[in-house]
Amino acid sequence: MTLDALIARYDRRIPRYTSYPTAPHFSPAVDGASYRDWLRALPADGALSLYLHVPFCASLCLFCACHTTVVRQQEPLLAYAETLEREIDLLADAIGRALPVRHIHWGGGTPTILPPAAIEGVMRRLRTRFDVLPGAEIAVEIDPRTLTEAGVEALAAIGTTRASLGVQDFDPAVQAAINRHQGLDLTATAAARLRAVGIGSINLDLIYGLPHQTVDGVIATVTQALTLDPDRAAVFGYAHVPWMKKHQALIPESALPDAASRFAQRQAVEDTLVAHGYAAIGLDHFARPEDALARAEAAGTLRRNFQGYTTDDAPTLLGLGASSIGALPQGYVQNQPAVPKWRDAVRAGELPIARGIALSPEDRLRRDVIEQVMCRLEVDLRDVAARHGADPATLMDAAPRLQEMARDGLLVWEGYRLRMTPAGRPFVRAAAAAFDTYLQDGAARHSAAI
Image (cartoon, rainbow, N blue to C red):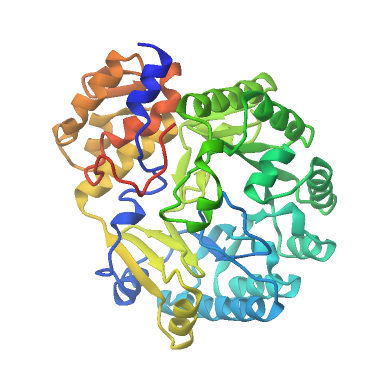
């Protein structure tokens, strides 16, 4: 089968599988009371990870599908930080003890849009109410266009160990089409400032499939990005979902590459990064061989959560801030997405949960299978089923789809063992989807698989 035919066959809209079940299947049946019960049941010695969501940006990038709003005044930012501190107290009180934390991730939006003093205040409250362990990873997503010297100093003061810089694309025509003007020099200055204060681990976020992008253009962007000497790169396909994110309708579909062109761009980015010594990690991450992410992939300990691929193996991730999602042994919870509703709940002393899902035994089994497929590009269903006390035959509803992919040369399917081939790695989401009993064909809520 030709590559074009493969792309046409497998370019369905399917989840990125940063959770299972995925967020569209959350419901209000899981609420603040459910969450409180789950928090009380956390083991006293169980390590946590924390995610803080800051849903504000100085301007709106048209490609963005995140929960964010443009804010240009200080007052709502200060009010948000103050409410974050209150939510930290609510969460700590509900748990009833200062559990150890070994990973903190600030995401958005643009976390560094908060005033430096507010960032430091939130971290002080976290350290007061939780046992943030020495050596904990503290990662922050950064828009280089709005990063100030004071902001850099605040990031150093809170102990930031890893910074993720949004790049997307350096081509001026692409930047104009997505309303994000950001030159290489500006990005290089941000990286240099961060390194100068001891934040040595730098990640870059790149996107393919944007309007007016070409294969030559993405190669040029990656080549320029590599002059910044990043430790990692995350390479995402643009998700055009204007029915969910209305501002994306400002991007003319005629300017978007077709599926075959998207695939060629993705492959060009990968080839360029690998040629410069980066290891391919899972579906869409790349890292220097000595980086912790590459070491985790080699050791078989790579994990996947709402931030993508990670070395974080804590069994519990708690979300803070509007729209943030938490993952606990019992299930998933999501905070109120709208800032006013989130704020009002917190100020009323309530855990601001909007929805969630409690995991069934089969959900847990399939979650672990899907995560192994996404992280290791292989899985032995007998091994995973044995850990769950389940019959691997439960998972054989995936066999017809996997056999089709095997016939197409995308994976090897032998008995209960699946292994993606090198040609199949870009199609790994399709293999993971074979185990998803919630997925409906043709669902428009997900991004394209290629």
